[in-house]
Amino acid sequence: MRTLAGDLGVDPMAIYHYMPNKEALLHAVVGRFLDDFELPEPEGGWKDQVEALCRAFRALGHRHRGGFLVYVLNEKWAENEVHINEAFYSVLRAAGFAKTETVFSAQLLMSYTETFTWGELTDWHGSYSPEERRDLEGALSDDRYPVTASLAGAMYNVTIEEEFDFGLKTVIAGLDAQRNGNGSGGAP
Image (cartoon, rainbow, N blue to C red; front, top):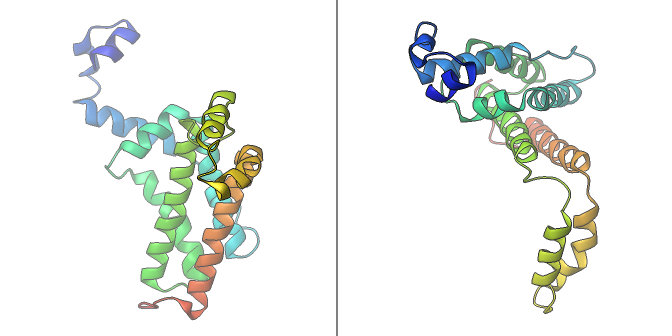
């Protein structure tokens, strides 16, 4: 709160006029961040719709990097967060997922998207820097890891979009298999 007050050029006590504590301030940041989520038009089948929701959420993270990072760390539910879950739940229920499968599926889709976006925004995902390439090549120089060494070129040349697409399509394909009777079922 003191840092924020300093950045705003106000007395720290002035902030408490608007926010009772740091938790309330961070919750307000999450609310503002989620207010900017634009629900995509429901086009195509359920797979297209959940993919569009995941892509829209990832795009939101890219538009508001700081807000996204606060969102991921904030544990308190925001009302507009329920709005996003409702969108996922509606698509999945309409597709025939059982109640429990709907909840698990939405959590999996959101978790994948949140984790991947977090990795992007914190530079965990993405292209190898020249230094990272040198470090990996050094680690592979003694022939102890022949399979990894054989994949190094592929590791260096994957784009972040290809990586996100592959993971998202894999998650959706797995959910489709669950929905088609290969899963545990659950109450309809």
